[in-house]
Image 1: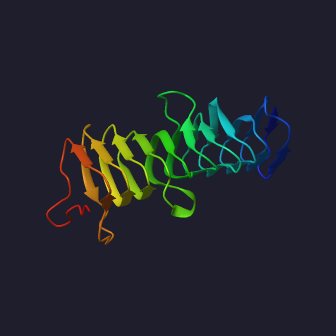
Image 2: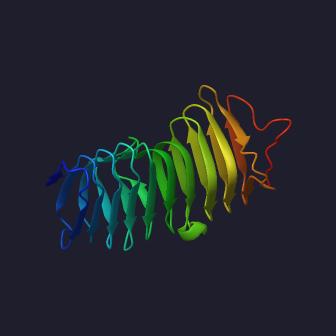
Length: 231
């Protein structure tokens, strides 16, 4: 367990041989960077950035990785990334060598202004984010499904999957940048203020799907001046 109250201190820690152990690190304002070959982590920073790269699979404990305003980066270069809770007023980036999933049941995995998640196999998350980009590495398609259950309005920048895409918001509008799926695509926004809209950024096609497209909302789909383009 490591704690820091200094404003300028950077935690930079390399963890080895911790496959069955856990680490707690806390900083009041400094950045935290931890490198691990596979461990459970509980990290808190009052305002700094948090970076957790791992050469093995990473399991974020059912407690939290928290930064009040900094960015959070969680990366597993040798396995899967199983989320507990990552929460920040900034952005969250998740990267895994296999898949990204949640380890805390139906509880929210990511709270952030923006989310970028990349994994070659599949992505399954419960979130409370304003924007999301979801794909394989470097924007390539995942081989499996992408599933996102979000609380509040959501803008999908780039979503790319060879499998199915399923995105649900509990309230608010789903706004599409470019969503591509070789399988079926299901977009659901049936809560208060629901709707499905185009982001208005000039994409020729907002939704490309190889299978069925099911769009369900309590409000409108597209507008007269900016209709939703589906292929």
